[in-house]
Length: 111
Length: 112
Image 1: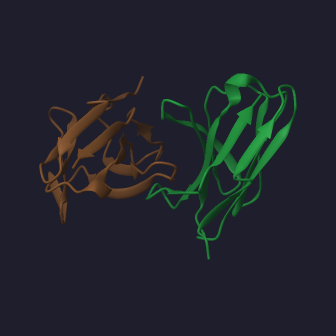
Image 2: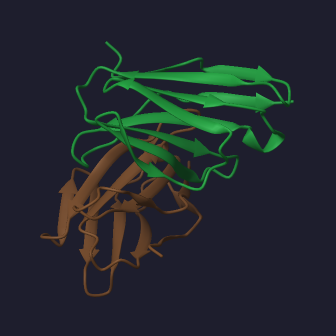
């Protein structure tokens, strides 16, 4: 009964490839997020969806495209991967600006 | 733009001593201030939060204080234990948009 689950946990891929990370929450929350955490541990918001509608879209390259098929799912697709995309990507959810519940993270390594 | 500064970036304390981490924010409309703890290799988790209508909140060995006039808030951990070793993040948001602005994190090291 994991609250926020994301897959895969690890991705290792070559530059130029495309990859996707999936996220699902079973908390009934109205808002879902994607965060990027680099090697210096900064937590950077990338996207936020409220009831399937994009509400935050920080300056990330348009190679990153989020998709929310329903309130419980928020997937992240990355095209033409670059070395600088290597990081841990966290999915999270919250209800009306309350506590953020994070997934376990997906560690992306681009070679 | 909105900014949250967090200090220190690394804090090393002797086990049993207290630790204090400080954050300042720039947006005077901020009214919600959570603290998250991230253990090595794990996800960030909320440990305590405070809203702008109170000045202090305690939960066992952890407390948070808020000074709205000076626009800063602090995390206090007393009687530190090895399991307190982690990276701690502060954040601030407005009720109107719920967008969290994060501090850069503090790595807390508890020395045995």
